[in-house]
Image (cartoon, rainbow, N blue to C red; front, top):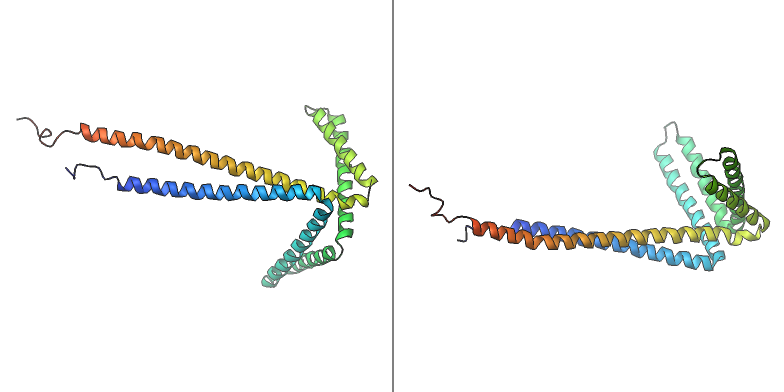
Length: 230
């Protein structure tokens, strides 16, 4: 009778492997959601202390340029003898010089970047307004509002420059952290919810499969009944 029973070992091992993978995925998405929460908190703190956020973003930008310059210089040395060797050296030197200047003068760099951002808002707003008035397409109202908002934002930044440089870059940096954190939180929580639904479906399907196996085993004819009648 022991030989007639189906061996549940492979199926159980497969289910355990799937459960282990689901737990690992759930843990990974949980860490992703935790990272999102940290970014959201950092963004909220940056919105409160915009001056500190501005200086922090400048220092991060400077160090990124320095690290990128060092890595680019190392790659240029490895690729010496090629046609783009001097171009790689020049790009690495520019990154190193820019990173050094930003770290030495973060306030002046923030003022320059704020001026650049204001000019971008102004030109972008003007082009959107002109394009919306000339084309008058399906998105006329949205383009008009976007152009007017960009133009107004550029004028407001320039009207308070260079004082606006103390909070403009920090505000943009904090908003980027906030929205990135919210997206990570939504992604992590949504993925964990989907994994939970999949696990519940698997748990509900397992008893049915086991019952079907037992029913098939019960309906299997006995060995003496399988012999043909003479």
